[in-house]
Length: 220
Image 1 (tube, rainbow, N blue to C red):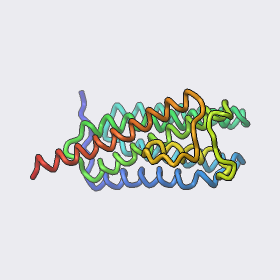
Image 2 (spheres, rainbow, N blue to C red):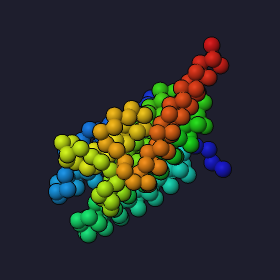
Image 3 (cartoon, rainbow, N blue to C red):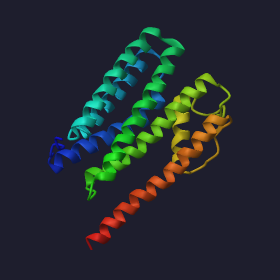
């Protein structure tokens, strides 16, 4: 079996940082995107850019890299189909596509993060990216579910008016166990997902901190 390619530290660090910045950019730009042609194209380009960033981070892992390429190709095909259909079909495909992409790459990066020893700055950046990917994955699935079940969430009438941003915001509130209570899941499926997301968010931070502390003790 061929081993993963060795990539210089500074290259890994730059790729990890660029990927993390792209995720932060998506989170903060989403409130300003609507369902117009311009909004669709901008959103698609942002997600595609994030996919390219994810692939660059995984480039040294040969077999997983090609699996990621397959996901990106599938995503582009789904995007083309969604634009041709338009309307609610487009929006539904977009949310499912995003949720699948973010969730899959979070799992892949988490798998390799658990294998790496010691954790460098590049891996710490990837650990933060995993956290953001999980929040985006849950948030997009909440959007898909709410689109098909309008009463799935209670969202205040004076909120942003952008359901995608509201539910991504809610996703990160659940992930970080902040619990403001302004947006609430009202149906079984989103409540169960919120429970799972909250548990994951709590244990993920504990695992990462535990690894950092353990590494520090082993090298003290």
